[in-house]
Image 1 (cartoon, rainbow, N blue to C red):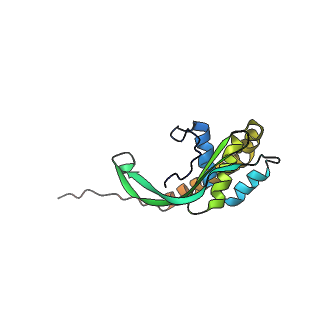
Image 2: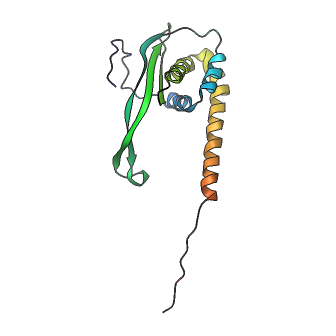
Length: 160
C-alpha cells in the first residue's frame, strides 16, 4: 500500500516496544463488541485527526519450512490499516485482517489511549485482560480438540 499521506509521524520504521506490540496484537484479534466496550470505559477521551485514514490493501504472508527453516511466500492477506493523532501528540495505529475499517479505527483509537497513563491501567486491567483470557481459552479448546482427534500409529516387528 503506497503512503499517500504527506503527514508522517517520523518513526514508521521504528520497532514497537514489547508492551505496545502485545496490546496491539490483542486489539487486532478483539471483536468489535470488545473494542466498543473498551472505548466506552474511556469517558472524556480526547478527539483525534487522521494521519492515515483507514485503507485496505494486501500484505504478503510468509511461512517457514518446518516452522523454523527457510522462508517461503505463502500467499497474500487483506489488511486494513489506519493511523491517527490526538491533540496531545499521541499517535495510534491500527492494523486488522480483512476489510473492516471501523475495527481498524477502534484499534488505532485504543492504541493511542493505551499510551496515555490516565487510561492505560483501566484498559489493561479490564478489557485487554478479558480479550487475552478469551483468546487463551480458545487456544486451549483448539489444542484439546486437536488432541482428541490424535491417532497414534505403531508397528510390530515380524519375525522371518
